[in-house]
Amino acid sequence: MRAQPLTAASDPIEYPVPESHDDPRFRWLFDYWLERLEGRALPGRGDIDPIDFPHLLGRINLIDVSRSQERLRFRYRLWGTKIAEMIGRDYTGRLIEDVVLPRDYRRIGKVLCDIVETGRPHFWQVPVPFIGRDFGSYRRLMLPLAGDGLEVDMLISLIIEDDSAYSEPPVDWPAGS
Image 1 (cartoon, rainbow, N blue to C red):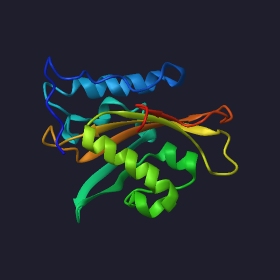
Image 2 (tube, rainbow, N blue to C red):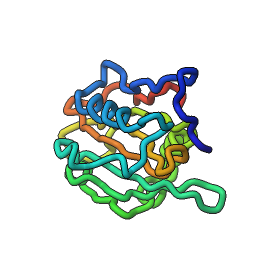
Image 3 (tube, helix red, strand yellow):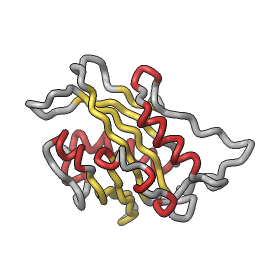
């Protein structure tokens, strides 16, 4: 599916992070992404320059989207160094379906496919299933990228850990994703 170019009649792209889970780094990346739309439905990877956000680099993931055998597949092109420290693993170059449990991939895969199909940003907060971490969950803002401005071929995400214990149900926005 291809994203539709933004027009006065199209739905505006809403900031997907609930106020209770916001962080200035999420807002900064979202605003940066919006600035690169330049009248297109979506910015491409070529519009994103890591030199512009050295303060976020260790927390950034890039995920390649490929279409094969009538399905979407997702591969980590970049797994940020801070994320590797947080999680204790580096998944650069790995397919997502190969590094998560099948039960978790059903949910994660659905969310990723929804982002690709809608071309809309997505936020979630999820518990961290790793023992011995000094945080209970992480928050993630994911933004779609399209080299041709329409068909999503990459996802960029910013991940921030929560120091507080995780005690509430997962937040997944937009609702129903």
